Length: 89
Image (cartoon, rainbow, N blue to C red):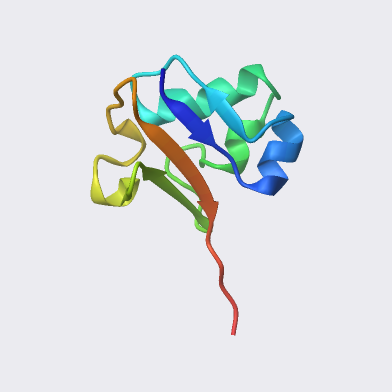
């Protein structure tokens, strides 16, 4: 089962950092968070199912924008990392 790793702020809302999800795509994995805490996936993806501007999503070591976005297929051993991007000046 793929594993979803959340950053601290989202882990606090979900009640844990590491979540195993029954999903075949990145989007399914992210939307599965709503079964734990309704609306949690909306903090990660837009209504168009794209990662929010300041959120990076990795499958293993590759950012999903370099793959098939949130439609990226998953296998049982994949790890999905949700990473808030750091900006500022």
